Length: 88
Image (cartoon, rainbow, N blue to C red; front, side, top):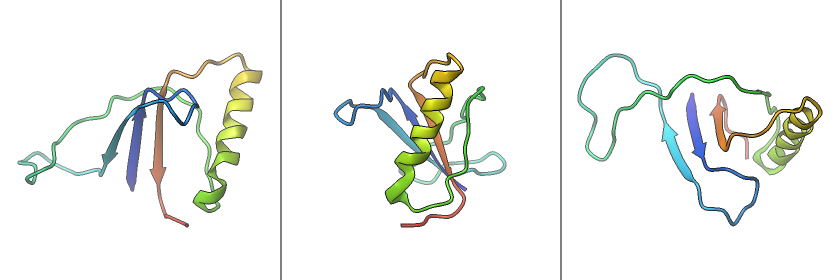
């Protein structure tokens, strides 16, 4: 699956952030030109499956943020989206 790893997210569209576009690979070896190999750190997180199109992904994020607030959890600024299948 394709992984988008965001750092520095604060929920405001105007905030600059870092985005890593990742593709899992097996084994060791040289990276193709223009790419680099890295290991994403493990972490504890909230997760949700978003079964719809990208046009309504904000609804899934809203559910996660509502749950986090109700549980007294605070966002860290890190986020990962794992795309099993892309739906426009």
